[in-house]
Image 1 (spheres, helix red, strand yellow):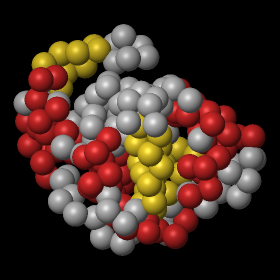
Image 2: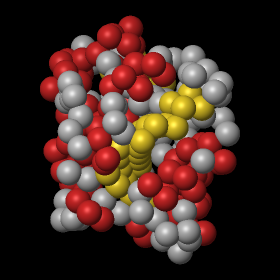
Image 3: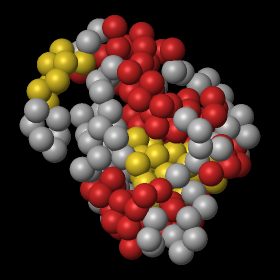
Amino acid sequence: MILYLHGFRSSPLSMKGRLLGERMAQLGRASDYVAPQLPASPKLAMEQALSLAAGVPASELSIIGSSLGGYYATWMAERLGCRAALLNPAVTPLTSLEKHVGVTTMFHSGEPFEFKREYIAELGELAVPAITRPERYYLMAATGDEVLDWRAMVAHYPGARHHVIDGSDHGIAEFAHYVDEVLAFCGIAGG
């Protein structure tokens, strides 16, 4: 099973989420792809993600996380022992998300939602100071990421497989070129 975790203010309708879902469908594996809409609360987001992964053996589970979803995917991989593919992951979201406390909107729907101050503490509960078993991790980091520092990403995942893209952006605009590479790491044949 592939569990896709989107980033802050994003959704399963993000370009990366859609491309992954479409490719899994092309490979006849649509039922093995799950991309939930995560709630703003990190605690509730992880409860939802853990319930979706419940009963799936670690060897059959891969989590793909983008931005804040990469932070979540790292916590889940450490907790469950599964693989995680991280796409421009947030490494220290406690500081970067502090400025977003309050009401904001979703990127794809424009719907308002509240990011509460207590969510910063919830993020702190999910911190992974150092990964274990780096072979479980695949990092895709873009040097042109305008939101997060790719060097912090590389430093946070020592020993993991790294694909550093020269240029690009936070959303990895050319992600269509990398879908099969990410899925191959996740154990999807033909991917």
